[in-house]
Length: 182
Image 1 (cartoon, helix red, strand yellow):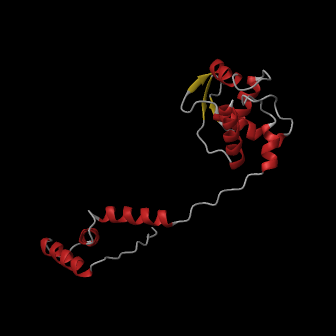
Image 2: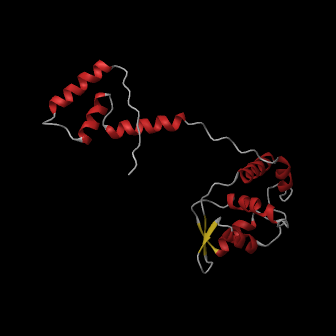
């Protein structure tokens, strides 16, 4: 088992020594490993060692730099927006295979989370967001693309909660802004 190194520092070493001395005096005999960890942590002002560890991990996580945002290709985004009308509905199924996943993410974003649909209900939900009349294609592509779960017989569907890639997020946001501006 690997060991996690946790730095230990106290502001006032004299107060720490007094607190540790008090806890050692209250303990019968030589403390074990876990007892000693808890004594050190409580002498430093924590409730116990787990509290000390949690505080240390949180401080470490907050000290890490935030991930650098991935740049979005504006020209590609402009091409993708052309697949949608002013109301944000998908006008046609993209003939270019590389454009399809981003359009599917938009359809995915319009399905309510944590809701199970039957085949007719998901068809209705998708029909509201496209104009070319082939919700079966969208339903199948969403399932094949891993964006929705469906039973083997295709009767039940549920959106799978995932994080869209950066360009799909940008497209979803842009279409939402356009719809809100109308």
